[in-house]
Every structure is written in structure tokens, then in C-alpha cells.
Length: 413
Image 1 (cartoon, one colour):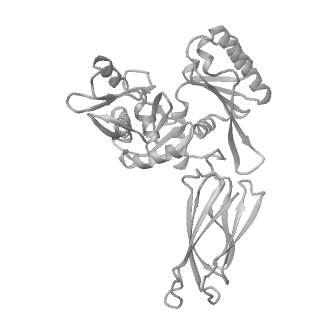
Image 2 (image 1 turned 90 degrees about the vertical axis):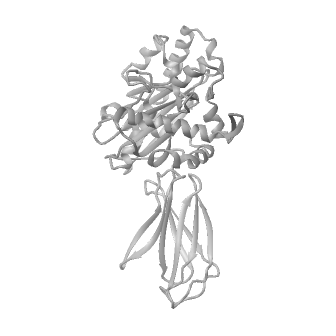
Image 3 (image 1 turned 90 degrees about the horizontal axis):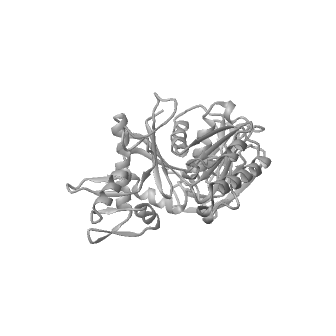
């Protein structure tokens, strides 16, 4: 695989991992080569000589000199997502600028640790790929030291990481508890082995009782409540492996609950699953062997195909594939119309069992002899369940010049 960085962004911290073809699994990077602290705060500050520093080095500067030119407490990320401005040397500045500088500095950890100046791909993983996240990274992608920047949500990063592990770990199901110290969510990884290719999905639940009042709970109360919640999870979903992610699991408060987790299950605890999973996502894109298609909240829910004739043989041409991130899904083709002014499209479920035909008429297309009508088709996804088609009349050389007509259609699952 090509060298890549996986960056996990959440509300409080950022983490970064690196992976290339010489490595069996990603390595999570620390701002200090001698440190095993991997949670990096969003703090950013500028030194007297004009150099920007980030993370804990910036935190120290801000603590020692409160008047230093700096941004603290997640101002840059949250403000950049909201499209806000921050004051920089008395001037209102788009928050995307310091956030972009933060990420550029973050990416230099790869050079410090592995001597890599530029990677082929950066995969950013976030809890949810919202339109605000898409807009933010579309605007700063050109500033980052990579040939390609991609977005993935935490569910997909979890699925890719878990399914890259030995089969005996995930064969009987996988559950992830994500606990930031305030809220807790549960991710369930499931594989449908009855279809080919195998379809992997991740479902999410919230555990009742884990919310804003958590800080008032005593350790033994927290242990008891988590124990009861975990038993409820395992009653409805069997699992052979459990992952514990988040700051909330730090400390020694799990006594009875850890016994429940370990009843016939392997249990793993750590902070860097999502950032490593982002690198694994990249490795799959580069050809790493896998036996599944992941279908998540941000994935297209069907194949959009056309029935065409290629060198006299009928076949199905796929414009958009099921399982693509909808915000990246696009395809194009040029086709010659057999006759008339209609195009036939097919919506096919990932397992191939459900098919729906969509017949589209190109109203106003000039009447021409058979096989002399040529059109271009550009398809892209608007969401997981909505596709748009832009079609243009290309004419047929000097014999039948283009009419210049264009059509736009939307198809909904």
C-alpha cells in the first residue's frame, strides 16, 4: 500500500497514525518520540520567531504566557466547522485558516518519526461525516501534504479495523463501547454471510443512564450501571470480542463490569482504534485483500446500472456502486442510443436480490435514425438514497450535430 496518515478528530482531541506497505498494522504517532501520549489537544500558538506550534507544546506556551498569540480549547475546530471567524492580531480571520495550519503541523509528525515528507493519502475519520465536515475539508484539502484527502466516519473505521484482525477475534461478533466520560455509545459490527460479497454493517445504540449526570456518579455506581448496561447489550447481541474506547474507561473503576465483559469474550482497551482504522480503510483502497462490502450510514444503498450492448454482447454497466461513500460517488459514460429517446437504468440491491427499473425519456431530443443518437451521462449521489443524472446530447459527428440540449433527473431509492 501507499504511505498514508489516518487522523481521528473528535470534540476534544486529535490522534494520528501512519502506515505503509512495510507495516503489518498502523503505528500511532506521538508529538514527542519518547512519549506515549497520543491524545493531542487542538491548542495552537505562535512563537516569538513566527513559528506555529500545536498540541501540548502550544498548551505550555499558553499557560506560561496568556497573552501569546494562540487559540485554545477547541476554538479552531469547532469554529471552523461553524464557519466562524476568530480574532488574529486584531483582525477577524476565517477559523479555517488556523485549523488548516494545525493540521499541516500535525502531519509533520510523519516526517519526524518516519522521514516521510508527503504521503499518498490522508484519511480523516470523524464521528459523523456531516455537510459541515464535507464543506470544511473540501475548502482546506489543497493545503494538506497528500495526494488525496478522504473522509470516513467512526463506524467505518471501526469496521475496517475490527475485520482486519484475525478471524477468530471477529467471527462471533464484535461490540465497541465508546465512552468519553460523559456519554456512552455502543457499536455493533455484523456480517451477513448469506450473501456474496459479504455485507458488513455497524449499528449504533445509546445506553440509557449514561449522560450529563455521569460526573456525579461514584466509581462503584458507575461500575454497577455499566455492568447492567453491558449485560443488556450481550442479551440481544452475541459477541466474541469487545473494544473499549474513550477517556471514560481510564482508571480502575471497572470491577464487576470487567468480569461481565470477559465472560467468553476477548476484551481490548485503547484510545487509538479509529485513527488506526482510518489507515486500514486506506489499505483496502490500495488493494488489501478483503471479503466484505461495508454498508454504513454514508454509503450508497444500491448499484445504479445501465443495460448496454458492448461489441454485440449485452451486459450491465455500473455507473455508481453500492457501498461507496455518497459524497464521493460519481460515474460517467457516453452511450449510443439504439433507437428512440429513452434510457433504461436499473437499481440493484447490494445482494442482487432486489431490482427496480427506471425508464427515462429525453423529451425534445431530435429524431434520428437508429444508433445515431449519442449522449453523455454524469451520475453522482446526493445522499445515501438519492442519485442525480445529468445527460447531454452529443450529436453524431458532422452527420447529426448536437442540439445542445441537456436534461437533469433525480432517482430515489
